[in-house]
Image (cartoon, rainbow, N blue to C red; front, side):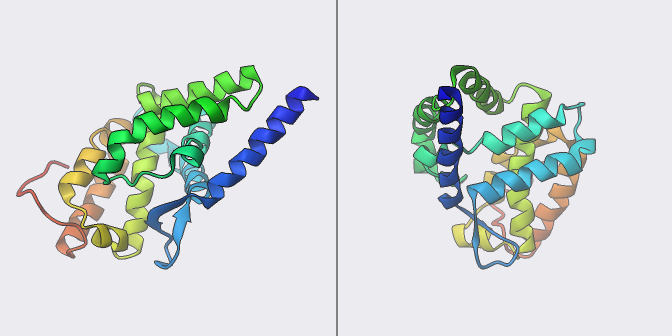
Length: 201
C-alpha cells in the first residue's frame, strides 16, 4: 500500500502541470496552451510522425519522454525559449525540481522517470533526438497556424529560431525541410524578424 500511495501522490502532483501556461497560442489564436496540452500533443506527434525519424526509434519510449519532459516545470515554471535572462537560471531550477518531483515515486520508478528526463536533456539517443525535435517543431506549427502571433508579440528573429533548432535536422531531415519552408513563408509575411542576410536550412 505504501508503494501505491506514493504512485497516487505522484499522479496527483502531476495535476499541477495543467496550470503551467506556455507562450504558444492554441490554433484558435486566443488561448495559450498549458504544459499538459503541449506534452499530449507531442506524444501524438511521436505516433503519427515516427516514419520521418532519421533513425529507427522506440516509439513508446519516445512518447514516455515527451510526456514527462516538462513535469519539472511544476516547480521550475515555464521558461520561454527566447527568454535570455530566464534561460541563465533554467538548468539549476530544473535540476532541483527533478530531484523533488521524481522522488515522490517509489525508488525504482523514480530512477526510471529521472533517467528518461536525463536522456531527453542530454539528447544523445535516437529517441531523445526525435523527442526534442517534436518539442521544437510543435510550437512552430502552432505559430504558423496562428499567423505567427507569438513570434510577432515577442519579436522573435530567425537567428533565434535557427539556434534553437540547431539539432532538429539530425533527428528528422524530412520534417526539418518542411519546417524550413514554413519559416521562409513567415519571414516573407513579416511574422519573423530577418536579422541575418543568409541562413542555412
